Image 1 (cartoon, rainbow, N blue to C red):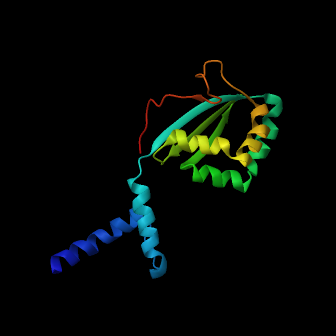
Image 2: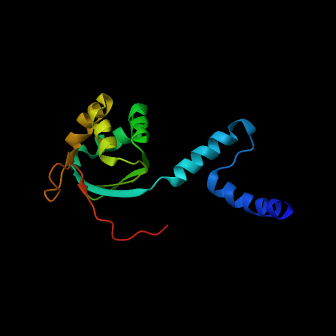
Image 3: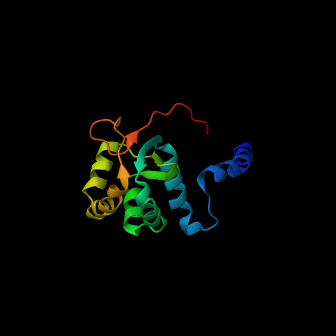
Length: 149
């Protein structure tokens, strides 16, 4: 029993570093369950690119400086985490991590969301899809050639 307790006390800081341990007893079980569920989910990284119309760049930046809360909620509900958009010259680069189990279904739900459709009506006119994108794509998917955690 003593050796188990010693191992537990030695590994607890390691577990807390990876599972966001809390000092609050009321939330500890929920937080630990959520951390375990999140850590067990596979993460798939996505990168994509699209051009931005130079005359629409300020509008695009302004929209993303203050995105609608419902849009951010929908992104999270779609199992998207760590979502970023970068700008270089006239190109927008999108990066996100997907933690769900059915990407196509989650993206279909997002596309069916009326608030998302309204958002896209504002952002799409700012963009110019690449001619080399795959059929059915708006943002062109990019191949990941290197990653390091």
